[in-house]
Image 1 (cartoon, rainbow over the protein chains, first blue to last red):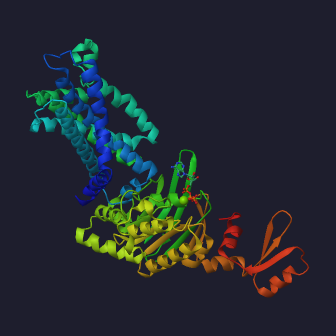
Image 2: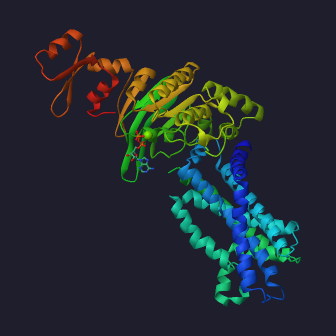
Image 3: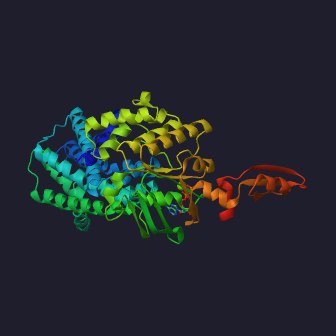
Length: 244
Length: 277
Ligand SMILES: Nc1ncnc2c1ncn2[C@@H]1O[C@H](COP(=O)(O)OP(=O)(O)OP(=O)(O)O)[C@@H](O)[C@H]1O
Ligand SMILES: [Mg+2]
């Protein structure tokens, strides 16, 4: 347990060092989206009987918890390719399970922090969300999926540039199409079926349903659990690949 | 004790280690000498779990580095060639994380941090951010960190590279002290005096192969006792003699710049591999 916590606490110490900068970084793009899409573009057009802002902000929670959880991949890359701290982990009696769990927990923590910030930003713009236990479960599951993917990708890439490429081709499209900014029903049927395979779609659906005071579908949670477990397993298997 | 049998490593086509075998008995200070690219770091990286071997076997105090990897890692401390501290954290935090990674309790960690920092003469730097330390201090912090969990075997990959002569001597004294405390030390270097001054046994490594393993004194004796450097037009030639009288005789009638000196480990390396360390 102690080695696992070492991995997690190291990330937390680094986060604490940069706390205000990180918070600022986590807030900038949601605020911009709220202004650009919420006010400038969508202010007048309701979505499914909702004000657009009420629709958008829960979507931003899903998007932000995804990108922040995935952000641990950059931290690991810096540790691996620049600071070489990753060698400390490799030379320590640390199991792959402890390493991956520690980093995934760090990803979930970052996602939680960004969610708190967006809830606050939403409140500032007059949007109140219902943040009950199932809302948080959805956030955590979403973060679990993407932090696990982040660890996997950080282990298999050969440079930090590869990582950026991966983020550009996988994470960014998901962020825009996964039900964050507009309901999937507005897309053609074939693309809806593709997006139904994307974890963010389910996370956004569950988070939004809970945030609006409704009840999310159990199937969305189940899918996130299954995808998260699969990603976590792949991440575990990938750690040895980094021992070139 | 370190036992390596026919260790091999290839990166694609490039062969980095071509069947290295050696044994370092418990408590010995062993130096691994070779030019750039000889495979020194690769050997250490394999022994400490950073890189996978392509073939052969190795064990640390009887623990196989692959089958019993965690136990092997628990016994070894590593000071890698490149600085790898968390720059944004304090010296104490860096050491504390290391202690946690090696499953040390809080109280034990706190005491040991004070102990190892005093040992490397950095007790007053515990709360300083690593970024603001000098290169020599960082190297000593890395040594302190490697000692945190009281490893039986310490791997030092070029511990004095890039440091000035004074700091280098300080680190040598430190390494001798660690050795006296009973730790087995595996040291790589291309500072020839470093190996000569510190090591009980030396291996010459060249292009992934061990050329010879012996004590520094024996290696030097194989070549001779006295060396005569004759500076020619293009380069320098060196001749070796068993006694001072023979050397004096040998330089008679030579013109140009001639120096007589004791043979050192560098001569031995040059004579046996045909290249400089
Ligand atoms: N990750 C890697 N990928 C490909 N080749 C590598 C890698 N690491 C080392 N090598 C090659 O393996 C050989 C041995 O390298 P190694 O780092 O072990 O040398 P060294 O003896 O430590 O040299 P130096 O004194 O420069 O530190 C070199 O030819 C090097 O190019
Ligand atoms: Mg090296």
